[in-house]
Image 1 (cartoon, rainbow, N blue to C red):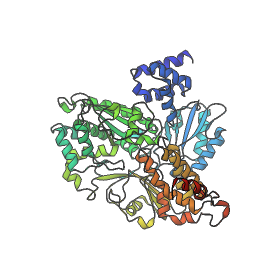
Image 2: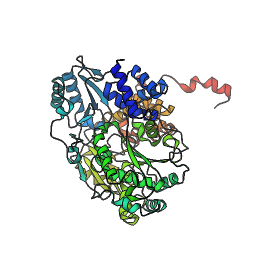
Image 3: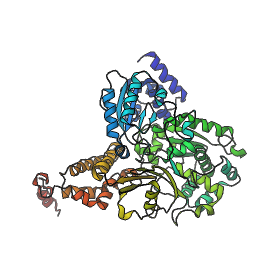
Image 4: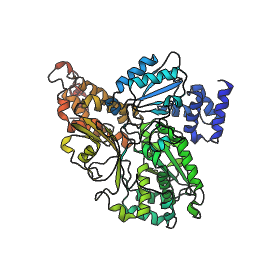
Length: 600
């Protein structure tokens, strides 16, 4: 290893105080400087941090965006999600390959361009989209792909490739300069409404922590990540948990395909999120907060750090917040490195500690033993925004919005086959038909509600309402037109996604996501049998034994489409064709064994 590389590694480790729990930050920064993370680099990082080499290796190997080998001067990660395919991704990918002179998964012979597939990057409202050295290039066309490669070979920088026409709102901020657009189509009163930073905190510091929690409970605020756990109850558990050190985490690792609301909120309303974290800290007695953001949004890093610095200057973060004695709280930012499972709160905490993002066994729950084994509250971005508005306007105001069991508003990310994809903030209780009308969707075959782990429903269910008591959703709402092959274009894409994103910790998830993909491919190709469908129907029950909710719902795309679109499966089966019927009879093969052991 060159002496300059060793100095770079040592300087980065020193930047983080030699703290091994900051391994994710160290790896991200070292890769930014050196281009990739070789085994030798991992060994040097381990030595500098004073930890086993294997600890660095296992973390490095877990995350999608950590590279073991050079990925070219320009690393192009093209989104391969369902919506990207709808919008012409295949033609864009072909153009990239032809222009670069290499296939996806390879680096061009001159070392300039590396082409790689990646899962949804949070740009479903402006597909096809790609990350080029961490910068987003949305609404790509084959001509634009060829133009980008030509610019790379001409020696242009990423900033020069972007040009000087940026997106709306804060996307054009000097510290962002992104080509991304917000596409906020409908503004509600909880998130995308008028807001003055610090106003809610000024009210909170006049209350006791118990009064703050009581207000959140009275407002029936529930987590907006999909599970809907009562926020006030979670805070109360953490407040009562023993220990002087407690943490507040904001989960901004929105990896569910079709979801992009956190990206827009963090771009336009970051103060609202940070103020929500400070209110949570006041309620539970925490002094430290961590915003965990998916790697795909690292282009927002300088901007978010700037917002934090401004809030410290304004006395809304830091020491003696709002002049309140004893109220000290600050926020740092932790970026992920590409792992869908880190959206699960315990996996997120493991990642923030510098480890593989594998879910923990529970109990204990994070509110008892979370980050660094200290009581930790993990809240969704949208949940924290809601808390600020509750403290400003009161529980009674909040409870007037929504349904009996679902209070407030929900931010929806609408994408797919519609005229107006984007962000819609609506009160809980809107029907699916209402959303389709707002988004300009026509001739709709199906809607994927809640992302791949949610439910795929047909027109006969479009009258159902978005609410915890009916169709709960974390935010993703994908419209699927009648022209799509639902099995090949959608369900198979989702099956591949879950197979790729399984952390592999639990046997059912590790095995059945792969097996389900193989069986589904056989059915889609017209070679499946009735017994194949029966297997796919039976396996979701086994998936319930996975450790985390993400693993438990990984077969939902298949299970819900078999339930709601069974004729599409039946039409693909090789009815009565002996070539595709199982030739091995398990019952007959084990008959003698069963008799010997008294089974049956």
